[in-house]
Length: 127
Image 1 (tube, rainbow, N blue to C red):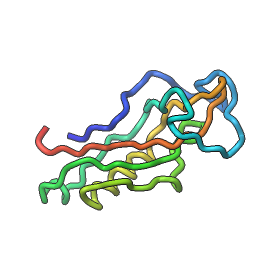
Image 2 (image 1 turned 135 degrees about the horizontal axis):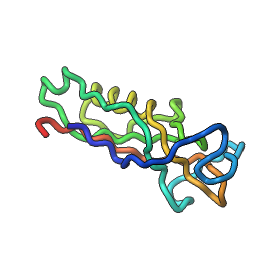
Image 3 (image 1 turned 90 degrees about the horizontal axis):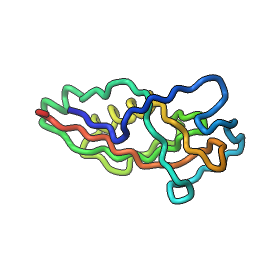
Image 4 (image 1 turned 180 degrees about the vertical axis):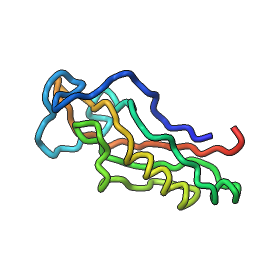
């Protein structure tokens, strides 16, 4: 069983408006979680694929990724970094999953902003 960290919400995005009720800021500032009051909330993602070779080898564990979530709620693919991982195949699967995810953006003063977060992705066999 693969366990993503965030729970799915019911929000949907439309056009350029944000979940904050305003427009996304156009600056490139990236905030960290100590500078905002909420974390991005996952609302859409493809299923995580447990790599068959890693499963066959008995590899499981947590992949921890650092990623910038843009003001539109999409991960910045260029920003994804591995903080820790038990296996390179699990890392690849976790990165692929994060790239496909959509998040409810973080708001600061009713404007959506970019934020840097750590995202753990757990791979567990036999659950």
